[in-house]
Image (cartoon, rainbow, N blue to C red):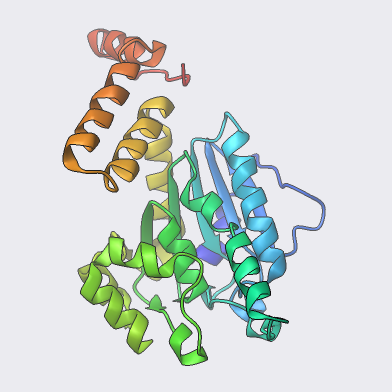
Length: 279
């Protein structure tokens, strides 16, 4: 199944939806995994003001839910994960000062980038511009063989403005990032895998199954250990090595006395699967 059709496989599972309309972004929860779906398939899930408003709310809801351990982001429909910003909303700002103020206020994607729980982007079809920025804000990116990636903003006389100029170099290196951003060229899934933009490429029909399997594998581990491991890697990558090592030691020490750590040791001795409770 494609990412857009993965929800059908969950129809027999218990899940909940947030809000009444759910026209632009939806949230479902099942077996410790929250699935956030960009839901504008007729326009390749283009990002409009409603998406910018609803996506952070969905992430925040998943973060608050103690039963959720992993967050997955996908796009509805067959055409793609997200084709970028909805250009029908483009208009000139009243002044440069107003534009600067509005830009500084844009934090909608930061909520995803700063999520404490692990995040997975399940990408199919088009993943362009702001769509790629959403994917880059996630911890892990899995793509179908037919996925297409690109940063076309310079061709529209703008630059990636939702983290693309910062997240992309950290994911693929400075030279690859500059090539993609300055040329606006599109690359296929094979090239994306080779440069480290995605961690795995799967057949189109297997994206939903593979992404859910990965999410549930992560969700099966002790949630505090997973969160601290993510924190060590994410924050440590921005620190000098000595400071990163110190952060790692501090977080490791905090886990030594947790109930989950003691449960893991007991389960190992008793040759059974541990039951982690996030304590």
